[in-house]
Length: 179
Image 1 (spheres, helix red, strand yellow):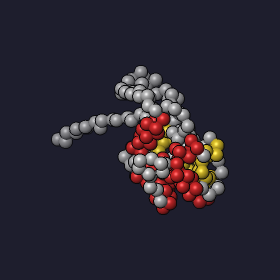
Image 2 (cartoon, one colour):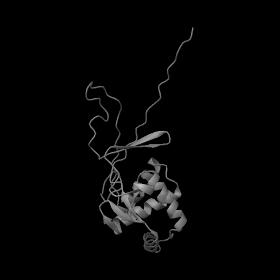
Image 3 (spheres, rainbow, N blue to C red):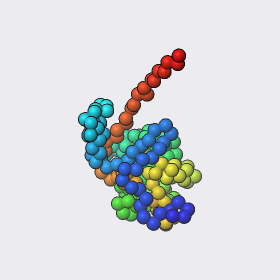
Image 4 (cartoon, rainbow, N blue to C red):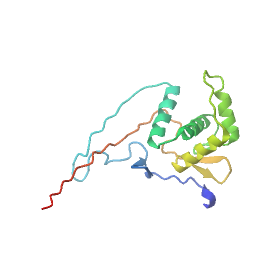
């Protein structure tokens, strides 16, 4: 694993990624049994609010990208690189968990989006910084081959539905009387 490159996909189930003042747990939806209720004591730990919204493909990608950006505190560069990742997964994926993310993929992405009202601008240096951000966030990892990346299958996928859950916990005020 020299130079941050991997021979096999480094992402494991139930990975926890610390991000600023929160932790993001990545796992397959529906595997956790102790999300809201402690199974041993029966104690309820919170309320789970779920919103279901049916959207078209373009809206899905926009909402998915926005939620990933929010969850992982991605900058504009990271969001642009993530958009290229999503496009490459749908159009140029090598295997289920590998994808080309090189200058040719960036150019193909820009050409595919050039006919829109607002053409996308993405320089190679900005793309490279965005890829570094996605790597740091553990969304992708470099393979042994230059320009080819492993995809973290826990959230970058080719499916048609996903659930984002944000747990908000109130800090308890603990008062101590010194006397």
